[in-house]
Amino acid sequence: MPSSGFQFAAPPLTYLVKRLIIVLVCAYVAQLVLRTWLPVVEVLALSPGQPWVWQLLTYPLVNNSDPFSVLFGMLMLWFGLSPFELAHGTRRAVQLCLVVTLGASVPADALGFVLSPAYPLWGASPLYLGGFTASAWQYRNHRLSFFGILPMTGLQFLLLLLGLSVVGFLYNRNATALVADLGAMAAALGFMRWLDRPAPRKPSRRPAARPSGFKVIQGGGQDDRPKWLN
Image (cartoon, rainbow, N blue to C red):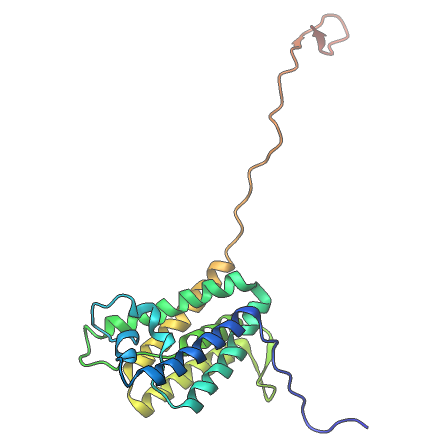
């Protein structure tokens, strides 16, 4: 008998995403254990406007949210980054993660010099937001299915991501999170434009033609065809 209702298939758990989830979950548990003795969040989370450069890269390792929110973030990381890794490979996925991590943290850090005090930045949301953005841009002219429920184009999905970030800001007034979201999306779009650049033309490896060693002279009479002399 045919099954009723819609069918939903999650993307495969790819090599990089699986290891990222393990690392981030273990880091979160370690944070919960160590926070009694060590200021883990204060050291690793991004404090905008402070001269602690390592925080530009370490903020995804800590999260000051509840366990359910962290697990939901890992689910979003799975759904957001796995399709990109499947399409472009693990090396490109690692590059995308580095690009969106800095794309979110650099403008958020600069915000701290303008808006003081600014909210700290933590969590892996730029990673899965960058993955969603990159995949949506790649299929911007195709029909997609948002979690197997809502059909839309990739461009409409990009607008939905942008709208969710703005609505989140209107709810919590966290300018750091909004700037980080916009920076991650812009970095992912820039990375995809870089991947779409025309491939450089390779120089021809054919050897240049050598002179034959023959000369052409003009003949006389009715036969004016070239005459070859060695």
